[in-house]
Length: 287
Length: 317
Image 1 (cartoon, rainbow over the protein chains, first blue to last red):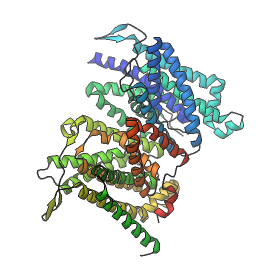
Image 2: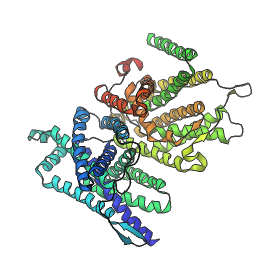
Image 3: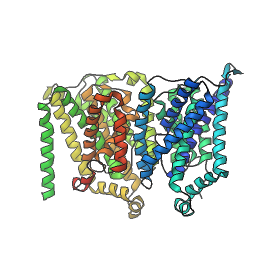
Image 4: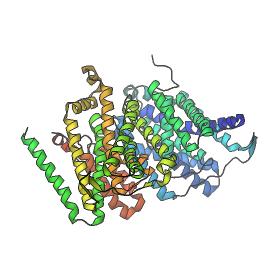
């Protein structure tokens, strides 16, 4: 039993890091633009498919990761310009509804383009190590490390990069940033592109753990929503902690009940958070 | 009472109701059923308009209320020794109302996107419960049952034909519409609309905003449950798909397409969506959502009022 708990801890941390990558893209987009992106999970799914197709043609996982991220960044930028830019300044609820429409389109587009069968990417890091009674694949740890590295790179970029400072300035005060000569509409497009690229990267990292299917988007959107709300909307560090917290909760719960019922635990965690700490669990108490 | 606008409303209402009652007589079987289905989805859309259009709370979880009405009616028809229409309706409505109280209590403390996300999460909880509780709900296979006859207890009992079922459902939907319209025009409905326009001010005037919101969610859930019961009676089966998020999403689409805050708008939106789906899926099969989703997103951007939004003032008179 003790060993099982430890194995589930490792599983939870690995899933948590991939989820954190998805959620940090979502929270970045919300923080800057007040856009709740309902299509975020579908961007993960499209990234996974793009990666799977690239890997199938070239046999190189890293190339797949790169191509998927770049392709989805361009796609995200186009999406932002065509559908979200006209909505700037309207109620955030309108953006949920608009991105919900996009998510319907993307899901059926994937079905049309990639077919209903699940697609798999072979694990790029071979080998397993012994973890109690299991042969645990190295790749799972590798995926967690890579997700962490991407989030770390984003953090450094936001903290020290010139454009990162533009982004933070836009978050703080859109009008003031624009008065200082920052091209705010371009920052919005750029941030959406970065968020989409991160979603795509997590799709490719996730693909070898489980297959990519065209319906996986909604599940990712829902879980990323939960994580972002539990961590505090627009708060990057909080989202990462919340992703680990939620994934660990689900991992432990699936020791007791079936995995499909374990989801309820994270739902309940969300509702309790909203009731008692609506600003998020992992943020300092507002003064 | 009989002001000119009032009289005009009743004339138009009776004319539309009469038209809807007579049209199926001239339609082939498939389109008769289709028209009945439009009415049921239209009732679901109208029920959510109380929240989305009048109170300004976008619910992404109406499938929970619809599904509970559906499963409540299904269970009553399967379990009761002498299944009948009214018992099914009673059980379905009770189930939906209980769930609505539960959801309302928690979700109304939150606003805007948080309300939307909470309702979405609640509906997924009920989906998971219904999907995995196979003993009671049949799990993925759903429940099949036979259609109850139309009865007036102790007097009369007759099997539904396609046309008489349509009339029955039309009557229920028309009465629901009148009730919902009455609710939105009552002082209670006015408070809901003032919450939509300016919540802090409504609170400052002295209204207990949370209580009004709770009642709004309950009413909305009750009528959504009624739509679920009607669906059970027409289709004679219940499946977990109806509790899944897709249904909630479609309800939001109905509202946006038809025009929020008009009651008639969402019904028209439902008709528009279902006709569009029927037409498009003949060419594109399951890919109909690609053109439809693009049209929907374009409507959100360029036509936020929906099809009937320009008539909003007259429809609410």
